[in-house]
Image (cartoon, rainbow, N blue to C red; front, top):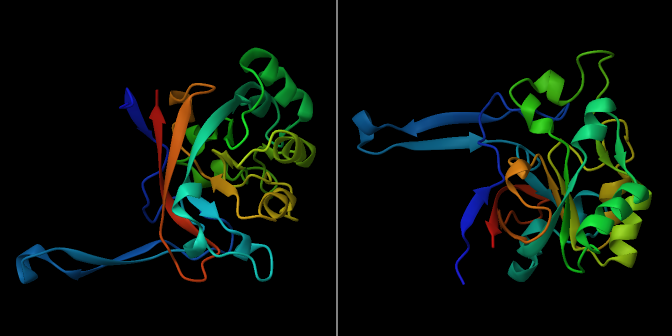
Length: 231
């Protein structure tokens, strides 16, 4: 059965996108031009975790699976969307809690096994202002919402979630320098998506994600084109 609509969840990549401190810049260089060569060709350079991207176990665990080894079937999964815009507006360091997940389930039913839990914070409104998106406008530290580890343990252990995703620069939140959520989710080759876009166009349940990765041998992750198919 064909989907009624398809929503792109990835930001376009260009040199001005928000960039994690210390990450390589996004660079494009024209190596062949229409007028001189009859075709256009550019070289690009960027970090594996640039723009909308997926993280792999190799980025956090010695000997962990790299992104090139992810089975194709694991990159297609149902999704649930947990709305935390109100909490994120009130507190830029908000972490998704168990209570929030349980409140969501009272309205929409239990998070289905095998689904990817997407946290909708509204943060892409700040995408065009990298300092604001990273929450560095005040004290210079990063402040943006993320997942709380207890909520992630609930999603993984008791609900059997296939992974998590978020519309900020990190599932851990700006104030967690330990990457505890990434490390926990990626103990197995699950899904971790960051810098998602257009989550406002998805229903709480019913969407199916198709994640297009660059199969970078040895890759700790990859920029991705994420499509959501709506029923």
